[in-house]
Length: 413
Image (cartoon, rainbow, N blue to C red; front, top):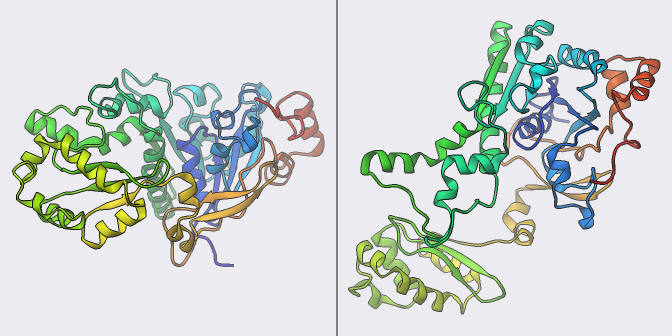
């Protein structure tokens, strides 16, 4: 088997939710040994959120949780129990990397902040990701990715002109922030290889997301334009929208970015007369008559399957894409060809598809081998074989509620 790029790397993953576990997942799927630490007293938020296998909620039945925890060992540990301190100490001493995505102050309360961990393991690389960072007037802000969406102004920019601010479909920062952290961890590992020194990496998810609204910030700074809700439209492009196609709830997205594409678009839909039509002759006139233009385009697209419209437009050099459903994505021939989905067998959910990393390393490809763990699934192995606790010590921790067995873990939410 090909050696993995992070083989031999040891990660104590105290993070929860989506942002932190995505970083450790990338390390795990490229060879790192990751121990995912979870409380059996207060379940990870992803374990309590659907979709659930067969629509039945349960601690080990959430697809959201499984998506971000492949290739990890899972242990249960009540960090609020004073007798958990020795477990945590051994984990930190064992680890090369410690992961934290708890609210500010939580890890310090448990004696697991960076300074405390550095005393145990001077070479440790410690990353922290929180909503607005570990310091500053708003550092105690507690929330999830959707709250960061609001802070970023994404809700102001999302929705129809006559609607209230609208939450984007996804907690955007949760899926943006991890990639900054992953690169930072790699940089810290390279530095430690050269110097032997650890590092503290501290991230604000708010700031990570802010990079992606930079054009709107610059537009305001330079032009005084405040971003507003425009539905599917764009300030500088027209047509720019999602149009109905043949079939039930089938759509295609089209974005015409310049006048050359506009001329090609007109030829594709059989309306060369629009090129010289005063209503549509340039971007200014098209924006002034955009309601009518979108209506006419929809009249044309509704007679075609979205795949047909996409192909015709792309063949002519006009950007267009099918609005795909989850079912479409699982059957997408390009994703299948690139082996993007990997089927892994979960102890409770059974075989189901996981996303592989969205990049391929030619010499050290990823290797998603095991599904996400059930709560406390690997307690026996980790506590005894990795951390060196005796059978009697493990039995005492079970009796005292410091840890739990998978069988004792809650199965319903």
